[in-house]
Length: 312
Image 1 (tube, rainbow, N blue to C red):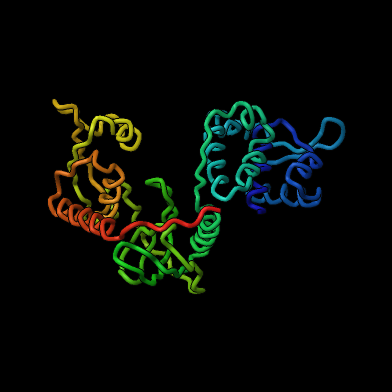
Image 2: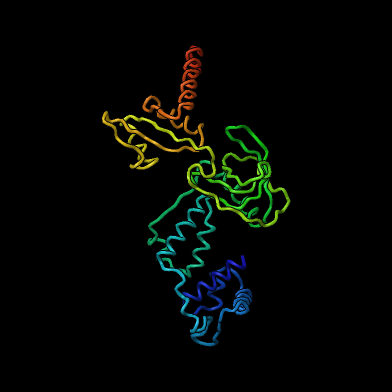
């Protein structure tokens, strides 16, 4: 917290001509003695902070340092605030927003009515997701291994990884790390992780490649699918993949071509369209989808009448 407070005080002094110790103590919710120690720390760090006693006095940065006052424009500050509020939406707290308010030196014009971009990253899994993100942030900061059970289309497995990045992409949260089991870097979806815990073992610093976020970059073997959709599905294709994701055919149907991360997702996505989608390629997924539909038909036809609970 001291580093956050030092950055906040520096931001205040860069944006205001003068601030008093009582003002800073109230804003950052610490004692005046703590503020005085923070000012000394800033001076030791090479920031030319000066104090003046008496009426009109206070704490300020020397004039020859004021060239760096405009660290961020109001537009940049609004964009940062939108992102921080998005992080707050994960767990329902206002921790990042409070930090931003302190860094903004009380500029309430963009903290309230002036804010036009709102980001909400919350989900149905907020109660289980927030503790995972908190633990992974701790593990990344302290370079601690994490262990967990992982559920994938290939089954359940126990994993131990060196975590390096948390990512929000493809509408979900992931962690990018070095997997001990595979001996390589892998992407893990947080919603598929269970019994997440710190192993207590640290790992050394290593060269870490940035995760590629293109389709198939971290999911090898991406499937290239060609699908014909009824015209009534246009709204959904536009919503999920954009207006340029398909070509309208002479009969009004929509030819959609796209690469998918895995066959399981492709099949479940197609089945959500019921009879309004026709998979053309790949052929092996087409056969597997047909078999699944036939098995579902047999299951429903053979189940007999569905018993209903008695009316209350």
